[in-house]
Image (cartoon, rainbow, N blue to C red; front, side):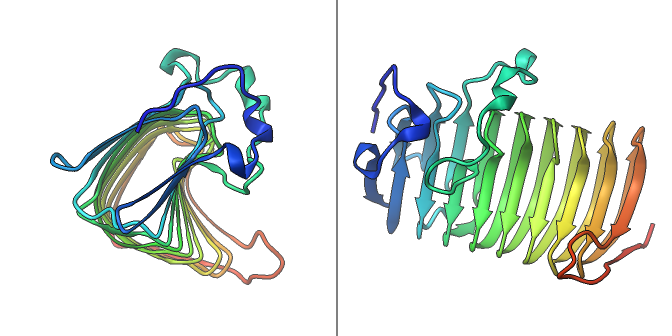
Length: 249
């Protein structure tokens, strides 16, 4: 599945301009500039942007045992650029370069880089047990998960201009997090989420972890180094109450 094109105003795409594929027990929808390669025997999905506004959506898909690779159009040495002025939302209400909606994720692996979207990876209304998420060079958030129930063995994120990880309105458990150079928060937990981490390491970031708006965060082992603040507990939205956070070590 390859479709490359030039000179398209990606912010004004209509439904008829999009590419739609029925596969993986669900549907893949993407903008024309996405170069998509799917190998069923190897269970690999390769996604390349030809424009920083390109996006791809997996809807009702079973991505269990798949390895997903995403390569954005921005360069790793130029991830703070004029592209920050682009709209963070496309006309279809999506914020992610790669969005997973109502999808199943078991033993799934992600290796993503160089995204100029609001989120490189957005997981929404999905569930499962992900093996590993690796992300580097995010122009805004690296990983954003909403309304989901997800366990993750390993998260490694390097360099996000905003949050490295943003969990909202769900249940999330991570065995090992290694986060560095997060412009705002290493981990943001909000909107009545329940978050557990076994081992967390955050370096060179604004806030190690923020637990807010009736969220409960439990950290077994935390290692914070060269951050402006190690942790934050706050009420930020008026429709929610306060929050909790606890550390064992």
